[in-house]
Length: 117
Image (cartoon, rainbow, N blue to C red; front, side):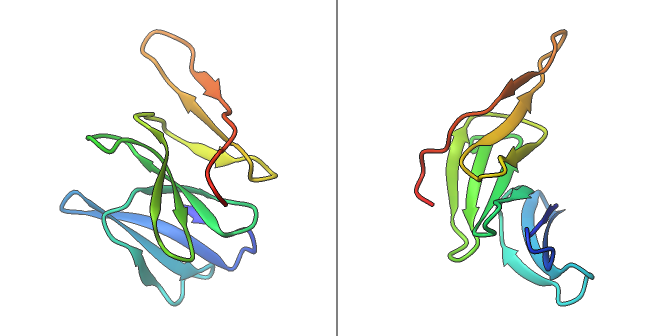
């Protein structure tokens, strides 16, 4: 689930028959509408509200994705990276995420984003 930075919208992921659907709603839960089919788990919204971070946790398309709010396109940021959470930096120029490994401490990564905004 992700809050829009203006606190007016939320993005929620549901799973039905192994398909991830993202829904957009007003922050009070009203006006729920489908945002995207077969996408990812929404993790965060960029500070400018133009992009969302999405996570795919398994399968051939596992990774961290950026979703454009305007055109609803899923763009791979970190293909193959499996994580349990990701967040934009306050300036929106990088993403922080943790990777957990069995019998080790989690690793924290903060790559700069090189995709177009």
